[in-house]
Length: 484
Image (cartoon, rainbow, N blue to C red; front, side, top):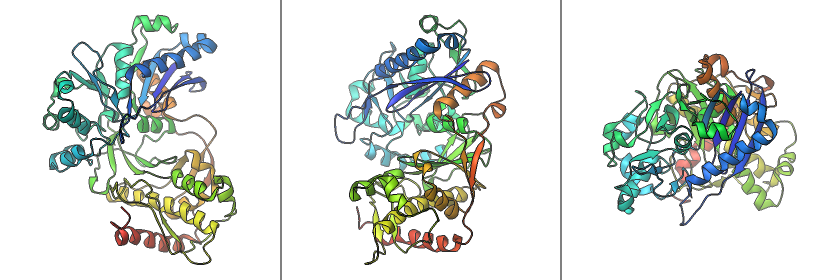
């Protein structure tokens, strides 16, 4: 058996996988986010341990024999968080999370230093780890001088599990301290935030053994000795391992609250100017790129709130057959946008409204606006040298068939729907635990799920969608600055 532990923002999930990669059981425990000031988001690392204990205890209560057979553990987690540890191994302050924006000024200052984009291949976003430490240095100097180690959230769990200060490449790539091409910490970038290599954990690949489970924890969980803990992965890379998106050209589109177009790469292909994330993958010799949309299903949720209708009711207005674009254009920038604009102040807009623009026209425009935002990400990936021939759709929005038809037609590539199952970050983490424990070939283990259905582009509507996308692309520069 193999255990995947995914430390999310809203909870910890523990998943048991058997040698045949069948999910035996899973359990979760909730987490709360503290927001002491506007734009702040923090968690107490002790709560991560408590939630992990609760999730594993729930598994033990129903599947103790399976838990006793665990040979490897994989870790996944929310990225970018800053967990500050003193020389005695104690936590110095609440962890600053990925969605905390207090360090926006520090991020802007670091991004203005050309070394950061050159070395990391990425813009320095406020959510990244490096600007958080710059903020602590400027605003909490008494804390900063006591920092002995900076750990990402899942790597604090690793410290508790194994006693070792270790991270891995995919998560480390989101700190703005990693030389992503060389897969090594950058002394130069660390020095820019008043740190050095002594403050950083050791680095391993996500498929490698990072340590061994402490005997006291193994005994409490009913496990034997010698249980290895794999390097693991950041949440998106772990999900990619679960989805089998590990070889060049494999990709998925995630239609959740936010949206992600994820592509695996066999080479380092940065394109920071278009706000594409270029990170190391969890597998050695592999990288990945992501286009990120801040308001995907959130855009439809907003329209639900305005109209007093459910998402199902709104999409039912459109029927089953894909419609040609109506001429109404929606920019889904309700909270700014990441790819390709890196514009936190831009806001959403409707354009092309007429007397005949009814509720269905607005719904159609919202779905198309998010769809064209994915097309923006596809174009950004192309600029970085990545071509996709198909994508797999995941996330809650993937249940909306009309939306998937629109995405296939706008991207002009097939969209695959996976068979039913749990292929998320905890599943991917468990796969990495299996690879590390058994020294297995990760490409043999991290395979895609079976495809239940493929949605092809509507060839008759491709020209109309191209025209609508050109209108969409022209709208942002035309009104930039008018909505912020």
